Amino acid sequence: MTTPAEQLLPGTRRALLHRIATAQAEGRSPSLAAAVQRQGQTVWNGSRACVDGHAPDADTQFRIGSLTKTFTAVLVLRLRDEGLLDLADPLEKHLPGTGAGEATIHQLLGHSAGLGAESPAPWWERTPGSLRPELADVLGEQTRMHAPGRRHHYSNPGYTVLGALIEAMRGASWAQVLEREVLEPLGMHRTGPEAEAPHAGGWAVHPWADVMLPEPAEDLGLMAPAGQLWSTTADLLRFAAFLAEGDDRVLCAASVEEMKEPSAPPEPGDWEGNYGLGLQVIRRKGRTLVGHTGSLPGFLAALWFCAEEDVAAVVFANVTSGPLLGEVAAELVDIVAEAEPRIPEPWRPLSEVDAELLALTGPWYWGTRTNILSLKPDRGLELRGLRGDGRGARFTARPDGTWIGLDGYYAGETLRIVRNDDGSVNHLDLGSFVFTREPYDPAAAVPGGVDENGWRGLGS
Image 1 (cartoon, rainbow, N blue to C red):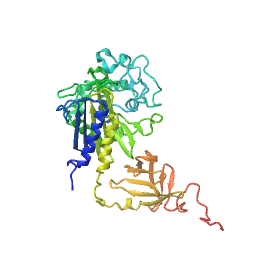
Image 2 (cartoon, helix red, strand yellow):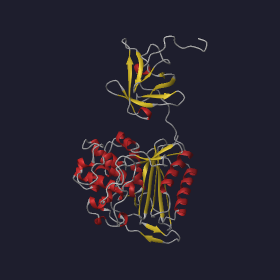
Image 3 (cartoon, helix red, strand yellow):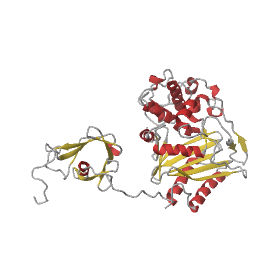
Image 4 (cartoon, helix red, strand yellow):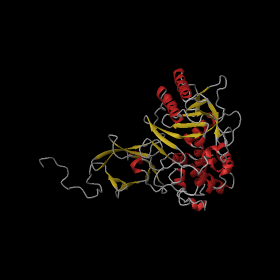
């Protein structure tokens, strides 16, 4: 039996190398670096470069652009978990005078606050942050493009505002808070707002000729929380492991999962993708990928993690445009998942039996529709249609004896076990729907009652 840390099969490694080599050649990037992680262990690193002997390695820094937003979102969720704010709070409550104060923190995190996509001219990614010393310089005169909460509209200034919120509530710079609360605990010592050797230089490649132009690497000032960071493939795989399971030193698993939940309806025509709280979420080939892409002049970056396969991939390039790194990173996940699918853990029986919960399992009928209630290893319950259709959900217990829906149609809904006077179960009440042990069981409290003549055939 192999261990997660063992290298991938030779055929898989060659397929990964072929994919990034193709991306570097066809995308005409001076260099490209990638890495893959499986079950929390790095299993492959690869790179290509236009200069022989100078290919980047896992310790070479690249700018990661908007991947920075995920780190900023983690800092905001930490404030929420400490009880210092609520995501439903309007910005004005904690950071007054911005002109965008009616937007909630949740809307800012999920790009549904209605703010503009970019700051006013000049182009903020290629000019010093000192040109925008105040939030008003970032937001401009027209702070709102859309009504808050109505639609997803990606906003770099929105994350600048979140960075200012973090600084106001922590009494320290965004970079200092990030270092102390996220980078240091996760051991990401090669990630930060400034480049530290060895690092790649950023280049623009002419669209119609194989010639290059160096790109400036500006300090983005107030815009830093939207895209300032430099990192390495090794460090971002550490971050991917954190996104997979959480880390109580930084953010608990439940809050990390909350970041992955869609925060607003997707844009029309983009039903396979959505945005959570600082995380992009896409569906492809039956898998869910969470992570983020990023770009700044001279650099492209992408990080995707697939929970079903427990595989993560990171790809960097030091070019302004060319290779579609979001697609490349997703394909690296596909290659590993399809060539070496995850081997499931052995089935094991429950460590103990709860007779009362066991008695609830089996078929339940909503009218005449058959549903199956099953007991899960974490002492939760799961309700599914017998044929895999209909409405279903997982449930977790509450202290008061009820159950709360975790997903699906019944997410947030309450499941109650309604008992007879002798303690036996009469029916399940799920958001006012009655589930009985028999179809329209006359002994159960079925709304509207059950015809006293019972079931009948055509000739009755």
